[in-house]
Length: 93
Image (cartoon, rainbow, N blue to C red):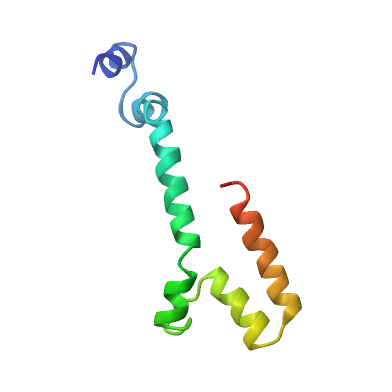
């Protein structure tokens, strides 16, 4: 409360207060939450594959990679999707 009050006395209001004071105060928590959500999102392959098989507009990148490689026998396209998935996961690791 004291930090926000000091920022208001310095002239910060509205979005500027939020962006320059409050976001940096919770940066650690935001990083943990966003990382956890991204990892959980990338792990939904088994749920999508078991429940819908990718039908009904529930396709995810890992399921698409599996379908292209082992169902459609498009190994090049499946490999390219695997590389994209790897590059998406690498910054999280």
